[in-house]
Amino acid sequence: MRKPKLRLTALAAAGLLSMGLMTACGSSDEGSDGGGGGGDGGDKSVTIGMAAGWDEDIAVSHLWKYVLEEKGYDVTLKELDVAPVFIGVAKGDLDLFFDTWLPVTHEDYWKKYKDQVVDLGVWYDEATLNIAVPEYMDVTTIGDLKGVADQVNGTITGIDPGAGLTRVTKTEAMPAYGLDNYELKTSSTPAMLAALKKATDAEEPIVVTLWHPHWAYSAFPIKDLEDPKGAMGDAEEIHTIASEDFAESNDEVVEAVKNFKMDDETLADLEKVVLQDHKDDMDKGVEVWAEDNQDFVDNMMK
Image 1: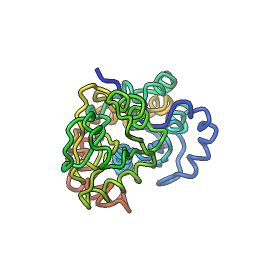
Image 2: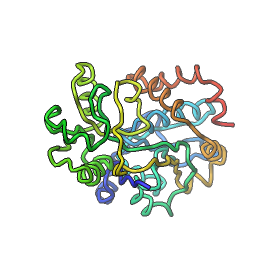
Image 3: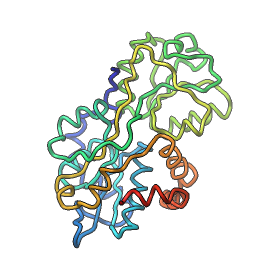
């Protein structure tokens, strides 16, 4: 078994970030104001924590916002870094989080908070960490990169420096394949995608860190490099977690989320419509996607 490490913010940052959680929540609201926990009876407010830069989470959180609002719930999305999302769910400031990668990517967070949250199960089971290149580059494995460093100025274009994907690339994959002639340059997911678009539009070589699920695989002519040494890790599962109070008082939502599943093709289509076709109005994107996938949407709350 390959073992990916933390994909996003390091656990060491959790303590510092927790002090600013309430401020951060207040500055990143989407939708109406809402507190933690909505009862099946009177209060039907739901606050969903959303991990900044995690596209699958952003798309799925917007989808659930749409579905719950259709059922009369008052839904707020709060976009935060991963550490304060876990803290928020554990403290009850956030009700749901749809993007917990297990067993390894969020292993440290899970060890710390698993007894303070409720695991509502797996909705996606094909999550992987990868190093990718354009299809027109003549490389097949991560080890092959040693011979093409001069083509990309010895650079692997990464995402944010605190990401687990950054960590596993730097501390596992690069040493495993002897990529001493490379530098992992970090920035952000949007910056990496902009660089990827610029390079592929010009048919120039580039090496990036990426992951499944992600819409980039349908938007750009790219391929994952084979990882025969298993340095990037095995496929993981994406779980939904809830605060204890919310799980105890919201049977309708909890049961619906427990039964929620999405395959790679469906998720890729959702991400494309919401994050690419309607990136300036993601709520509208969900509406458009829901019209074309009405049976799927209807079944989410059965």
